[in-house]
Length: 243
Figure 1 (cartoon, rainbow, N blue to C red):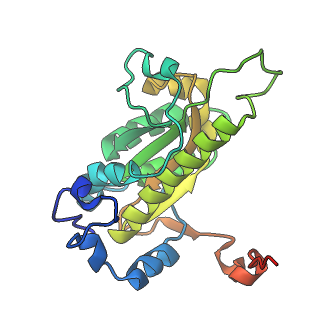
Figure 2: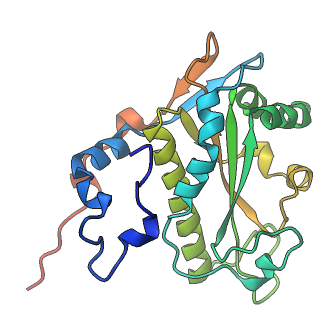
Figure 3: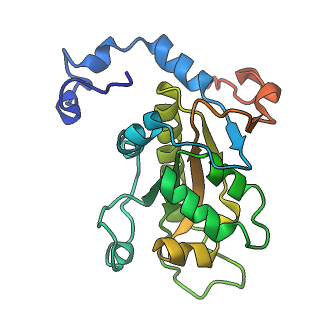
């Protein structure tokens, strides 16, 4: 699975998805379910910079490609595609990728910022970082103070789509045994950092996905606070019987 589909991916899709003979038919559902369950939060905090992990470096492009197969219901507004430097995709998300050396440079930028929190320590440890933004539709009227976007169905769909892209990225990293952490971004969502990275302020950061090396030495490793508190499906789902 980590190596990808041995035939062109688009060739697997047809009216009777997936087509007969497509390797997707050969993927045991149990393996997919197990991969989803194995995904977990792993936060690595380092005081000193860790050496880059070649595994992460070589996987970055594949992880981004996997993220791009997330479902989306509507294309992003054309105004985003017309922004200077925008690659022009119709997807309602954008991914900005930093390798280890650029994570270290970004660390130098944020370490002295107020409320930098644990971001510098994670940038010292990460071998890769993917900043995932979503692209809100222009507001029909002036937004109230403090509002980042208009609460419309279209924007809700864009957020859901970008979230699915992030989950794809996390699962692709997990399949490659790359420790990963979905952060809300903290100081990385500030206008100063957006300007530094060339991210338009019309976009909104949905997640900063840190990709850590497998060998972290003596660095602090923190897991999820909620994983052990997860409840079974009966606690958050129910079957509906209509008569």
